[in-house]
Image 1 (cartoon, rainbow, N blue to C red):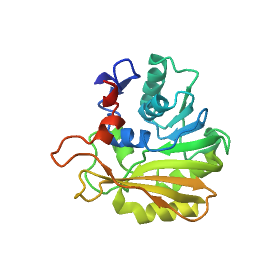
Image 2 (image 1 turned 120 degrees about the horizontal axis):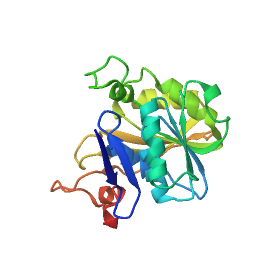
Image 3 (image 1 turned 135 degrees about the vertical axis):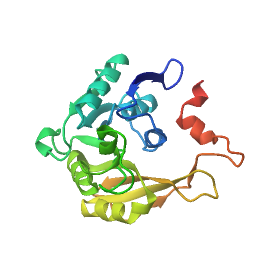
Length: 241
């Protein structure tokens, strides 16, 4: 079922479909993570219905976003979200397989690549309710190796790759990044509370970067009393309401 929401009153609106990709905390966290510079060219690999691009543009309206999405229904919805917000001059929606380099923009085209990739190897855990959600959940169409290969190709020298992932696969994540000459440069763990184990991680890599990684203070989602943290309220644009 299609639904419409808004980032904040007067902000970007977005359409989503329960059968495809529902808005999730992961996207909002990743949307708030990268450092953004004016007029940068950004590629979202596995863009779904285009929410992450809207989140980035909400922070820096001068960005140029290219959404790359394999599923035609999701890509069509991303295009509708672009039109809904009159962002045709800022967003391009490309229905393509990131594993097919011939279908992607030219090598070295982007300053920043972002991705909220599938977290689980194919066949692990419970299967999702729909094929679209299973594609987003498991890596049958987008392994870590394939994702980093695409990101490395699309980034200019010195460009950054930012993604959200699961802490239990951090060793594999780091090894894959370095194998593709994307040096991990900034790491931030996401925790529900200060005394909780991390549930997610945010990582920024640099193409051709030197060794040395900054580890930021954890991002806490809730306060001691269970209320949303001030940072989470900002990430969700609640400070604009």
